[in-house]
Image (tube, rainbow, N blue to C red; front, side, top):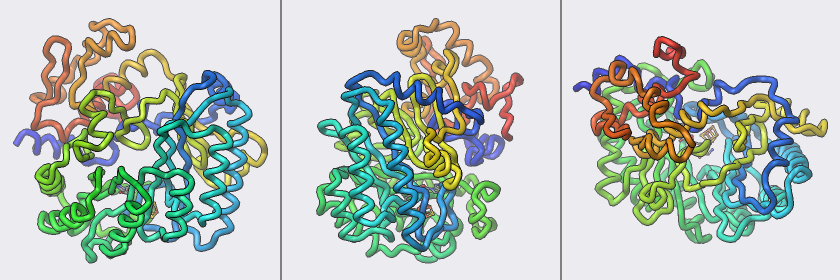
Length: 451
Ligand SMILES: C[S@@+](CC[C@H](N)C(=O)[O-])C[C@H]1O[C@@H](n2cnc3c(N)ncnc32)[C@H](O)[C@@H]1O
Ligand code: SF4
């Protein structure tokens, strides 16, 4: 019962505990970040390097009430066309600074809803990305697909552009829950999207599904998971619903009284988890499942899996450049985030500037803490001896970062011969344990500043 008590005390499912898709979390990036610095970081990418690339499309035809993503509704194509034109300008600005021979190994289009683009916009944008830097042989090109916002022509355009991976948004199959969260989506529509993707050779298909939604019960969760399994995904992201109405105003439409308790959420997670495991999926980190043959599980098994803005990834690139409003880039020197508001972003780019607004320059402490946090979230285990060798640190300074953990979170971890391991029953607390290593979230007394 210790874990459940701690869940209550520590608010495991408190959306204010970072998901650590970056360290420091993006909330700690500093405003007023110089575009010149980012220009220098782009120029410093060596000739013939391989990089990762992210394109953000912050538009949706409909705005689902549960959604906390940065996106805006649009009923017509004009603002989308203007946005695509702006992103093409940003791509040209990056190209001017990029050394010869740089290639893209991982390309990801996300949002919002990238599949809202018309087929000709998809073709045009993909060509502009490749003009900036060609795709490497065996590159992975993945796209977030809303099954409600896709058809044969757009799938053809994406496939012709080289898409070979996809992620579909499912959330929940129950029509009553869909209505309450403002996301109607029939099983047939989802099935059509899956079949359309498979017909076009998509071999790695992810699906997003949520636990912790209003009115979810164990039975409804099990039913949703079984429906999802019938569609044969290769990977599943089982996200805990984050109720953050102070950030995502649409969520004020969600009936808070129908949200499950922390214990209820854990039960929902475990219900889904058991079904995925019984179906042969491997459990990955805090919220993913994948078939043993899927590249993510292969990377997980061989210890090369990483964590970045897209969550868990096989992507090992040191450089991830993001274009579009609010996109975050990661360079060996630090993070840079574009202007979050679409209008302001477009104004900056159209004025001929790189659109970075906020950022963070890494220091040595960031590298050490960030790596420990990444290992905790990927493997529930951090071999500090390995981190010391990797990052040229002393074991003693890494051990010093563990001080106070056992007192703050008793009976959750072991530290033996420099290896920090999260106990099985405490795995749901991984984000809170990771936060102990977060120098930005924790004040000197060891308590989170956010809570
Ligand atoms: C950009 S969206 C998905 C792409 C596409 N627009 C769609 O709806 O299918 C990325 C994912 O974030 C997750 N998400 C959005 N809001 C969330 C929230 N409040 N809590 C947890 N996950 C959320 C959903 O699972 C969603 O599929
Ligand atoms: S879930 Fe997808 S379609 Fe719905 S609002 Fe969020 S990004 Fe848009």
